Image 1 (cartoon, rainbow, N blue to C red):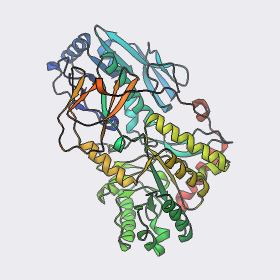
Image 2: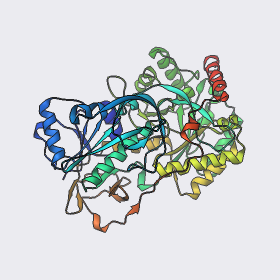
Image 3: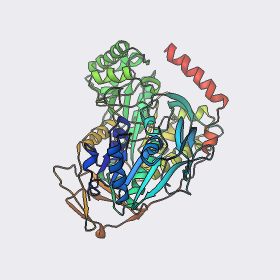
Image 4: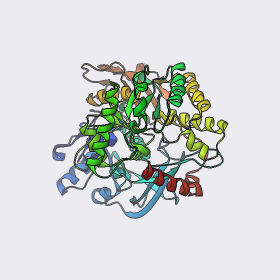
Length: 517
């Protein structure tokens, strides 16, 4: 059997999700010629004609596996549905899909009436599993996948055991929740077919996660820059510095003298605009200032973490390799954003949006700040997304940053610059897999593969292993790990969804700062 995901119509959201997960996938050009061994699972992404419907039903009855959203299931299976606003997906260990990241959806979805799995904010179930003949189908809420294309922004609380919950303006939808839902369902469907689920691991050399310290330098001073740089050097941390060139032009040479650090651009005026021309001029001016110090930036991070399509096109025009904006996404794996009619050539690398200053604003002590980042690291390890944090030279708690660096060393995490990770991810994205499963072995053709890449293999929806890419992998010779379930969050999703006075005050202040600086 080919361990390839077939997609009936490769919509942009499915391209993003499957690329992030790292599975082998392709668009099905002709459903009428579909064979049972051709795809390990098929995503029915849209409604089609009667001939396609008949062939898809034949595929599942013969033992295939299908994934679709509820509005498509109405057409394919005559599934009963209803519309409902879903605020969030709760943590749920009593489910067949225990590795889903809890998060916010905040959108009206079409829900399957007979869903039995995964709980929403009102206690309604979101996922329906169906057996049809010898095969299985999973029905997700209709409209769920398209949330990964959203550019909506809101102020969001983040889980902490401190006096107040820290908050930041970030992507309105928790896109890592959607990705983890899709991946968990694909793992489940492969286990139902008694075939392995194989995908490229998101970190080099099979690391559990990787670490980056991102520094936005807006309105800093040479002394504060030096203090933070010295701390990075003492701990061998190749940090990524995004330079706001407007306030640092007089001492821009300081950045070119940094050793083993990446220098990117944080804009010139510390503002972004809706108009392409204004964004492009600001980006160009920032680049020109950096070039005077012989710095050619490859990464961009926007002021206040904002993102819009005109900005995306401006940084694309200037040839940036990647950008990083938590208003588009956070705590997630990289991807290429969709710009309404095409994908951007600039890779998006999400980071964690809460700084030590945000924690101080939420009345956290130094001890509580340390606990916050230790909890976040455990979350990264549990759900396999990067331990990427950021801060500023002005207002940073150096004792907490030193604690994080020590934490990274204790867990043997590999520190990296965002540029190094972006280049590795781009290389991984070019690797096209076609894996065959036969006689309890995986067989594939291997040509010029990066030796740092690993294949993750999951079986029984419970056991997993990381192996180097090679032409034949005997599953009987693999040492398997058991998947962990559950994660103890300091607060519930219901508490995270509450609005408190600090959120309102911070929104007002940030709006003022964005206009005045």
